[in-house]
Length: 234
Image 1 (tube, rainbow, N blue to C red):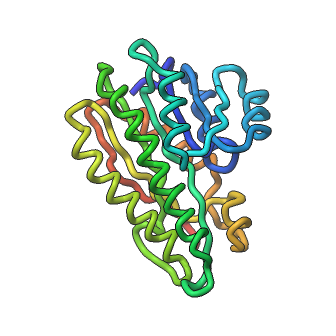
Image 2: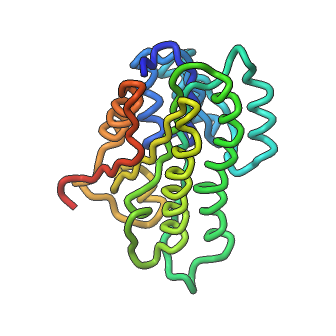
């Protein structure tokens, strides 16, 4: 796909991988990048950095009513998304008998329900468009393997992989690609906020963003349906 002049939505855009992908897409001359997140200040700062082709949208992806309202007020038959990047996610790690129920369920609300809400609203608009379209779901290595004290996070990311595989089979006939990207440890605030000490061996967000750009730019008949990205040294 030639991403120049394409309309792109990315969730969790205010920091970490989401901000890195937003920068990469704007520098690659995407038409409009709608960056969704809950932090107004961070989104506005990113727009100041990137310019007006980055459009900040303050939105919680776990709120279905707000998502539908935003889609209805923003898009139409003449202006609709070509690319959706479901990046928003949250994580917490604790024994099953220690983690509070609201935190456990909250991970499913953001990591899985939010992905469903965003995708189900975008797909009808994408189906109506001609040419290649693309949905990228950010999963995790933890959706292909597990570790202790990560039951909620792993459950949500395993579900992302299953959701993505089913979705690519459902949408390929509409020229809509679906890719599940499963990165290993990325050097972002995610680990600090989750109580895990970052390592110098972690992937850099820009490295993963460059890989996502590569996936988007593959020829229209080429589908990378799933990819794992790991740091060389664990």
